[in-house]
Image (cartoon, rainbow over all chains, first blue to last red; front, side, top):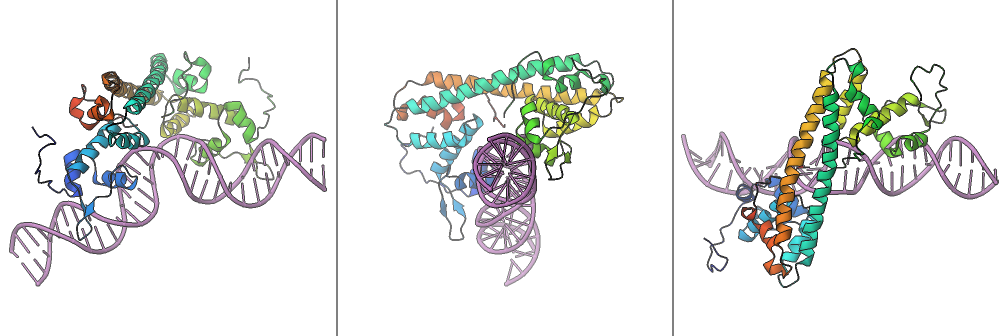
Amino acid sequence: MPTKSSPAKPAKDLAIGDLARATGVKITTIRFYESIGLMPEPARTAAGRRVYGEAHRRRLIFVRHARDLGFEVDAIRELLTLSDRPEQSCARVDALASQHLADVEERIARLELLRTELTRMVKACRHGRVGDCRILDTLADHGRCATEHGAVRD
Amino acid sequence: MPTKSSPAKPAKDLAIGDLARATGVKITTIRFYESIGLMPEPARTAAGRRVYGEAHRRRLIFVRHARDLGFEVDAIRELLTLSDRPEQSCARVDALASQHLADVEERIARLELLRTELTRMVKACRHGRVGDCRILDTLADHGRCATEHGAVRD
DNA sequence: GCTTGCTCCTACAGTGACTGTAGGATGCAT
DNA sequence: ATGCATCCTACAGTCACTGTAGGAGCAAGC
């Protein structure tokens, strides 16, 4: 298995399409990440095509994985900055992750209220005419809801 | 309590700000709903100010409540159309609500995988230096994840 | 050397569901 | 008459991309 101490890695160059295939990130998204500063500006060929190396690949995988885990771009930007300062305390990293976890838990809680309410609504449906529809009745009047489901908000 | 059979309701007119206060929907949002056809174009005063009545208020409450429950605008548009045809079967209403419920359940499932993974990451943190940070390690390598959390996607 | 077909480039518009701002007109109370 | 709240339109901004238009580069086959 490869270690980062291998000294003479040929650092094979990657075109943007190669990088996209290697990471599962779309070409347009890679360019977008560059435009918002999540990815650094790569070297270019004489014809102006982007040339990437192993460091770019690792960084993009980090970004993609953090996005998959739901971190926002600003948080990822900060995480990337932090990971460039290995001597610092990781308290801030912990705080970012903990905050994100708290956000996820809040979203789950809100969605569970929603699930409760929607389940109730769907069960109440007697499959008759629109004029007698309990689902529409409930939508017309929050007073018929069992829970104080707030708004979904994302 | 008011019934819709009250015949001579004075139908007190509402300015857009009154309607906003009565429903908790912001003025700009009411105008936005009008622009996308969720709310009908209201009558206007001679000076061009919008004038709303009880029917508008009920419709806006319906829209707001459906949005709070996470229905998308297109679904709400369809629900509103359906509720104008009280003799039709409510099967389509049921289908829209059931589909939305399924969507909510899927989002919950994905978020729960995320919660698992984030909890694991945060617990693994040994509060040391960035260079030894398990959280950053995990972000750099999906292989360290316990679950196939996909992407969050909303 | 030329064509074919793939890859890549920039620049900009569109998504969803709003929110915010600029700049002006109206309405009402004092 | 003045001041202030409310209202109007029109448009830009949000987030994290995705899609499109229109063009240029590059390798392989003929």
